[in-house]
Amino acid sequence: MKLLKHKGYYGSVEFSAEDSCLFGQLQFINALVTYEGESVAEIEHSFRDAVEDYIKTCEQLGYEPEKPCKGSFNVRIGSELHRNALICAKNMGINLNEFVKNSIEKAIHI
Image (cartoon, rainbow, N blue to C red):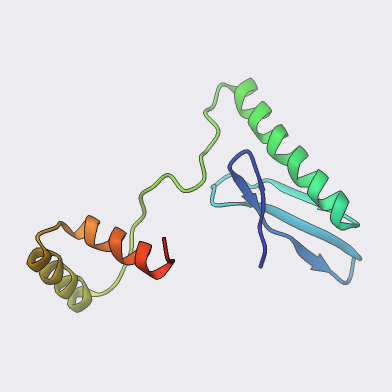
């Protein structure tokens, strides 16, 4: 899946055969923000409008707009993998957070 991007926000694009339209929603935030269009150009425009409207609405209501991917997340990996990761990190002289960060960077080739 390719994601749309505007002002640091990401959006999905899906197709509805029933309605003959494209639709999507902002990703990686809790707020439900949706958009739709009948062509690629329309869905891209509708996505950008949705981002702008979300930011504007948050400002009008006095809320800070959510930022996608704040930089922290919880991972459930089971006790054995958790223990083995801690041991590996300790042997490397780093903490678990740094170990996980390094592992993710390596996996996505940063």
